[in-house]
Image 1 (cartoon, rainbow, N blue to C red):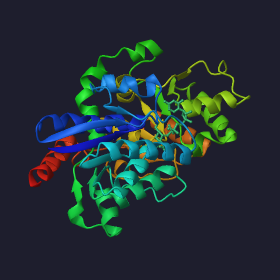
Image 2 (image 1 turned 30 degrees about the vertical axis):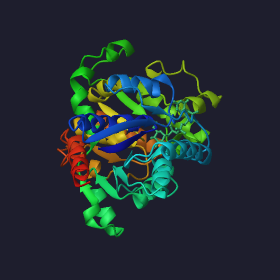
Image 3 (image 1 turned 180 degrees about the horizontal axis):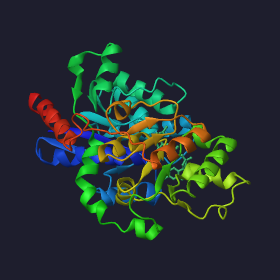
Image 4 (image 1 turned 90 degrees about the vertical axis):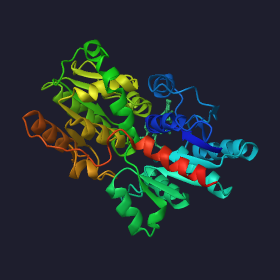
Length: 367
Ligand code: UD1
């Protein structure tokens, strides 16, 4: 029996581990998956509701680390996870994505000589000011198996000198969740609840430090979203860190733009529905660039770089930078009909979790 820990820390991790956990069920008796929730995200609408909607069991282990500076949060996860696996050692640890929990658990496992598999390996933004870039690079460096979502990841890893026999091209487990839950998402009445029409609104998410930590930038972005809301209503599910920054702004007046809908973070199915029916999505998220491409929905990424260039070369994503006036111009252009045609991205077919499970069972049989 191969005992594998699946590490889940922050919101975007949950839809990535779900399909792997479920695919492992097919190999009962050969592989046992244990979900370890670090508690990096802990609000009901950032965490628990995702487990429910993804049909995942309650985490087998909760480390409850909560928020903190990068060092505090990472250290708390490392201490909690080291204590756990010193007492109850898995045969392998799977980490996903690029959040602080990914970094923390991969380091702990590597130092205890437990093999680490990194799911979503090899993505690079080239921007070391992003905490996620640091997390990705370190997690890849200490992992023994690197599961890639797309060719970009493979090429980057080979350029960095990783042996090709440690790289496994599996596709995108986040897209597995998206495709399998799309029919349920379609049934959600969230557009009626917010008061917008299919294809008639702009969806936006912003939480990156480069957009929300500077008060002037955040105020300018809110003003641009307000102006856009006079062309088409804007739906803006607000991440907790963004909410706090908006609350700190003394210039923001919620009454000024009635069609700018600032709502709480949405449950997974509601957010998928909002993406699927949007006229255009303006975001600085990584996962949203991927999901919109898979759904064929226009995406404008308000960042200077992306670790997911495949969504630009093959999908529906365009990188437009963080200048608020450029964001205004580019969004209006899409509303006026300037569409980027996307296509199917190789291996984003809903079966990535099965490929990972099949690879792992191969390891289990060797033992
Ligand atoms: C983290 C990830 C980021 C990912 C994002 C998705 C890192 C370095 N960043 O950023 O890659 O895109 O998650 O959401 O890991 N908070 C709450 N409730 C929660 C969780 C957070 O109120 O359930 C607040 C906390 O006060 C915290 C802040 O939000 O200070 C930021 O949370 P944190 O996990 O540190 O980073 P994110 O910005 O969410």
